[in-house]
Length: 452
Ligand code: ARG
Image (cartoon, rainbow, N blue to C red):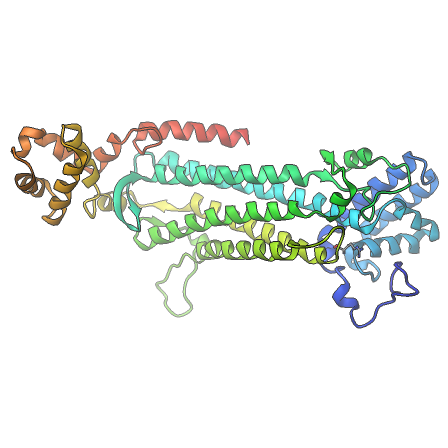
């Protein structure tokens, strides 16, 4: 049986399996049943299909659901296969189900229905990740660590400040996904092929039955636009990019002994018995490549498609499914890895001052005591070459300044500026790493997680 679509003329042939999306459509099997139900109920309410036939169709759909996707008859796609299955069960009257619609609006409705669920799951995982970052921040408010630029020691900071930096980025990822959700959550059903229908349908009603917030009004737009897929995949790809940076940081920190991943998120080597490798985070890092590739693939498929429906769209959908699955999983794994990692406060503290990372604080101190910042910068740079401690600063001052160092600044203040913990505590400008500033950020972040 070649299915119900023009079975006389298009019975199949060598391209049949190339044409068919039935296997991939398993993802929207449940969604299609829901769309069929909503459409059938609306057709009955509008007196387009009799209540008795509608009732039989709904009963058949329930039975088809119980039997599952694998029991569907052959078809070019799930829409055709389900319709065939309805007709097999209740006879030709089952064909009334497809009154006043097309597979074009049907598939668009199914994709949106299913993607809405998937994107909510992705959004939830971003919240779990944010909570695990907040937890790491909470317990490490005062855990001093080295901060880097260009991967070179730059200025001391805290684990809390680092964790909150990622929480902020993931917060924006949540927001982007929520925005994508709003535009997914609109109903294309009732657009028919693209050109509307002569039947007196109620599009608002099917939208309501399917829980869509509104209707995609223009019927040509409704059946042919996939910018919601692109926007969603882009938002997921952006989140994957955030995750890849987080993963890279933790991989580097693990390499330096700053953090230890739990065994659950580590792998070993088949030959080197001592190895504990951050493989899970390496895979998280790699997902950003897949997601970015999917955005590229999807954009290229959509680019230049004419109005209205074209079968290219069948291949567009898979990019979104693959991306939402991979990115949601990566986000979950990142959350778990962060939540179960152990921060080695002693190693972090010992390394916090490495590479004269307090140099900027010393220059700030000299500037606060009246030196032009550029002169202070030059003096401290010279001190860096001469060994970095108080003596080096004093010797550099002798070359750069006209008066001795202690006439410019209290030597004790210099010693304090050289201390990594004091250096962190002194950087209490808005958003800075000082523990009390971080406490404010933590509070705001907690409020925003519960807001979402
Ligand atoms: N399987 C198709 C898709 O995913 C359904 C729509 C087919 N419509 C058509 N006119 N051939 O896009």
